[in-house]
Amino acid sequence: MAELISLQSDVAACSARPDSIPEAKGIVIVDAQSDADVCHAGKLIKERNGLRVTAGCAGFAAALPALLGLQKKEEKCAQPLLTGGLFVLCGSVNPITQQQLSFGEQHGFTRRHIQPEEKLRLDYFDTQAGRDTLAAWRRASREEPWMILDANDSRDDNLESAAYAAEHGLSTEDVRQRVSGVLGRILPELLSGLRDRNLLITGGDTLLQCMNAMRVWDMESLTEVFPGVVLSRFQAEGAARYVITKSGGFGETTLLCDLKKLIEEQALNSGETA
View 1 (cartoon, rainbow, N blue to C red):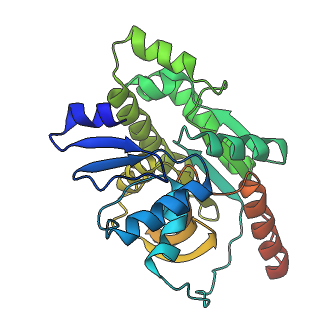
View 2: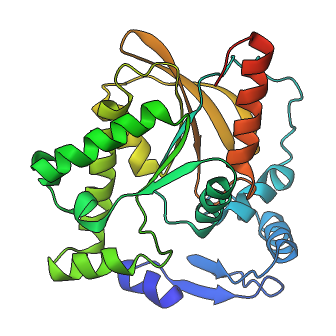
View 3: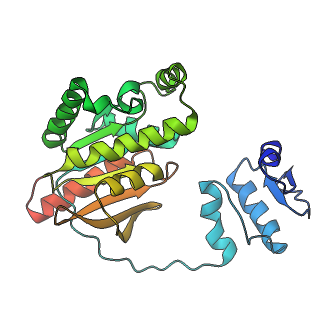
């Protein structure tokens, strides 16, 4: 990692173990292998007044509040009533997210994978095959209240997409932009007129493209449904819509089923059906 950073920056970079962090100028990359390593390294860095500019994994983010002395507020905003099912749009390749999707598929969610040509060919949805695919997804989104549309291949390794990208001379950045762009384009069409469906969107690029496509410029964060899993509200088609967002590495394996249970219980208590 230090060598990679050195190729991209003039700032000195070095690697270190959590128990032997040097007092060096520049960028220090700490090789932590456990939560204990992360906490120990964080304490050493804090003692040296080094927590001014940091970057890291979700585990480091979880340790930061205690290191910085931040107090957790116990009061929570009132959670709005969520009924009508959950439409999951996944643009993340994170293995934790994939485990969540697989568990959800095994416990009541219908899962559809977007094929390499569908997500990487710019004009695919302008073809008859593309229009037919979109129509099938639109029907499914109305008939199936618990649905996952996954931008990953049906196999976890995404080798089919990699082969398609290589065949068509697409870089990693090309793939990232095309996938998020396609998801942003199709989501408004799938949800148009379907106002009672809650959303779960994973992947920051995917969320941005989806909101841009729906011409949503303001989003109000309401509450943390589960740790790192945030519920927000926005306006679309003249009505309030709810979207749940998370980083790829956040959430338990059972996340989708936990959300499904929450929505079903709220629907039951309100006299509605999901």
